[in-house]
Picture 1 (cartoon, helix red, strand yellow):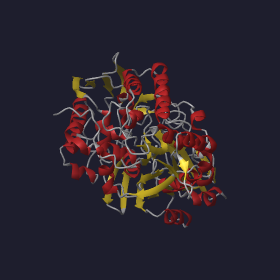
Picture 2: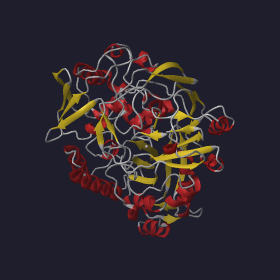
Picture 3: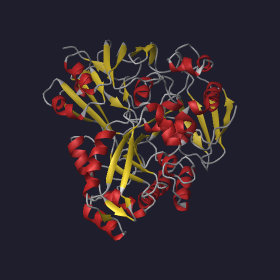
Picture 4: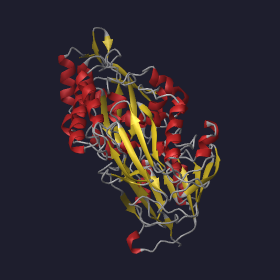
Length: 542
């Protein structure tokens, strides 16, 4: 076994970027639907769900797409759980845990009644094999490699006690052990090839099992009998209510909405914003949404590029975009305007909206004072160079194109010419690895403030900005040394202030998960990274 790399490979960043976005999150429901608290759940039935893209890989350790994790969260359990409202870390497969003083050792005490769908019991040996196998997967295990930075190994203390050690403080691992990406597979499953695991050919300990997967077409998961170790915040105990969930891959948003309205589906993901008014009116449908934790949607700024090496230009980009207009016009206020580098549903979020206030006049004045003078076509110039900036995006990242078009209009008002470049999914790793962009539209999900480290720490050679800031590097390293929020969160606030002062990112709008559902669907809830949980869902008749 080899230790993981301390530098994030391009695949890590690419996977994270493609995630759709813990405490402070909430579920908003509009339209039809009834008060579930007044109803008695009914077991049985099939839920038909419209996915916005093909999962591509159903191994939670390899597959980081939102649609993949939407499927696998109800199949694969984790050592710990995270409350999506408070951000608190709670028991799940581990009933208790300890963290040493510098957050470099994590000891988990496992339940003794958990089994996997192939009959294997949960043991410390199995935990060890899971984490060792992630290290052996190498770059295929995108997010898990990031979470296991500095992994030295897992000690089997006894049959139901595992101690996981790191070469340096790694406080974020506590939250990471509640994620799908570090969910546990059975021992026999871990002996299979990565390609086999991507097809869903594995056993896990969750309330559902994968029945079939037809790439680009469908996934079916079915209820597992005898499940009895749901996390404490679940609405019930025992088996899941639904018999099965049938996922259909429907990339076109209007077709997903049409399938819901026509009764071919009960739930759809990634509701097109233009369809929200239709689903919010009347009593036949409901819209359920939650802001995604992690980095707010916006631009990663490559400061090594000409023009963007000018801090005044980066300041103007921060001041020159009207975030409230994007939120109200594009998202019908379902997605809040960005108020910090982190979204408001992320632990450690602080309101830094004063630093993100829209002020086109101040942006234009700053550019003028710095020698950027408006040309005959309105685009500013300096020393013969036009103030032209290219924004790159990939269609898998939610509503990126529409957000870019709003920013394009706003920046034109201050003399900045923003051009838009679309890249394909196969191009993504290369573009990110080479920093082949001026601005890159990013929406990264994780319910832990350490999400800042990967993109913004100057100590990480794979950071997205290419700049230097020794104070920022030190603060982001220090927040990794403690799991105490009273100590950690002030450091996270300082880090965000420094990131904005450096102009390493331009937050615009919080990404949001939006589901459309028939009014007969009850018990819709979210886990901490804003993926729907199917365990408590049930369907009423009529």
